[in-house]
Length: 115
Length: 112
Image 1 (tube, rainbow over the protein chains, first blue to last red):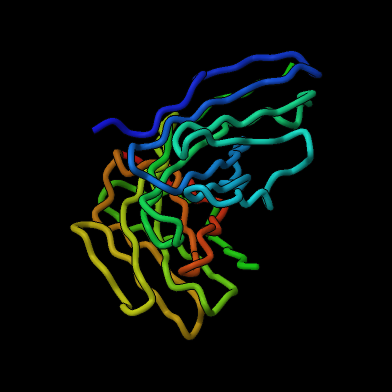
Image 2: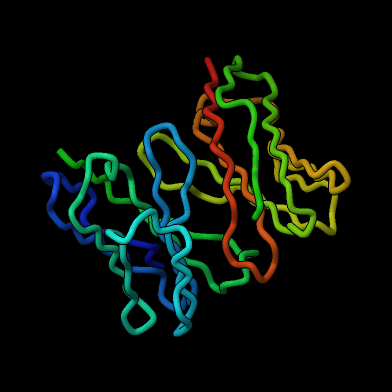
């Protein structure tokens, strides 16, 4: 079946602009995660959605970052007033449940470059 | 919160050699330990995982061992092949806490 998809695959923007990154999780997966991967770095947790529960936003680095998940499916990560340090690959992952002990299926990522 | 340390950051081996990557964790309540492989330019994919009720798990050329007392777990790859070249991430999570903590990754290079 179809895996996790993300769009766009690449995004180049100018400092100060807003960007929206999209994630389509695997159908039926209730848990959705956003991570940030900077060059040569690990996976930095950003935000987590589980079903219709309030999201866990504890990993968001600043109030310029926000995310929503509509209808328990598609999610959008928005970065306002982008800065050069926001340049990274943004990965989305989904899982069958939100217990943290199930395999996460990752999308291909969106490479964001802020000039 | 949980803290996961991963070593080494880079590992270079000759084809056919074994490779070992080690991770330590801080929270004794962690009970799920997955390993993900990320090939260059591709998405991370789960290659093996272990739960705290077992000490070792094998899948062909890869194995993972867990020492709960010492709070460390390791990935072992035998008879390495060039296609094993990738970045490997370990992670630890507590059932019910839903957010795994990832290590910083190990870049494995297998020279033919």
